Amino acid sequence: MQAKETREGCGLCRDAAPLDFDFSYAFQPIVNVATREIFAHEALVRGPAGEPAPTVLSRITDGNRYQFDQACRGKAIEIASRLGMQSMLSINFLPNAIYRPELCIRSTLVAARTHGFPIDRIIFETVEGEQVNDGKWLSEVLREYQRIGFLTAIDDFGAGFAGLNLLADFQPDIVKLDMALVRGIDANKPRRAIVAGVSTMCRELGIRVIAEGIETGDEMRCLRDLGIELMQGYWFGRPQFEAATPGGKIPWPE
Image (cartoon, rainbow, N blue to C red; front, side, top):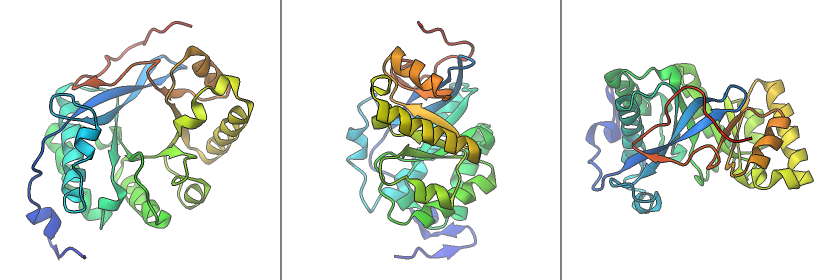
């Protein structure tokens, strides 16, 4: 159903009922292995007392999807600002909750101004497991975000929904490799060949690559040798509830 638009936005923005459940965030670092510095933190939804994400995500319905998506953006920015986060902030979003990207982004801009968090330090990435049947629509949303000044990322690249057709239509700032490609890559020649090809392609397109799901030093070293500098996973640090990894050099064993 098409929402009724006004000069201030639309009926969803103006008349949306508040969510009937609360939530918060944990933050997981994304590390630049070349500099050993924190590149970004990904905001990962949690229950209000740190309960696992499914306890929150199971409460999303077609009726509250829009309100949840909007509330997520504002809360992630508010908590990151309160923590004094100096890195980039990566926020997952629900493409299927967006009807007009130039209107639906307004509350995010208000939150960024209110909490003094620069929009050029915000990354919007497609949420894990969110099936988008219209790739051109997703491209339009990401293109508008990029125009405003946000960085954009395609999550789970190679998992089916985010593939080469989408990349041919729109080039995001960042591609996040699906962790299934990363797992055990040091001992898997086909995965190494695929990741090497994706890395080369993205470099030619001016797209940065993040490898997520790193759990061992061997995986890290293999990916580093393939030219990937940005990585995320338990080997570097687990998500911390309402806390962020301090800046500066990050020590880890070789």
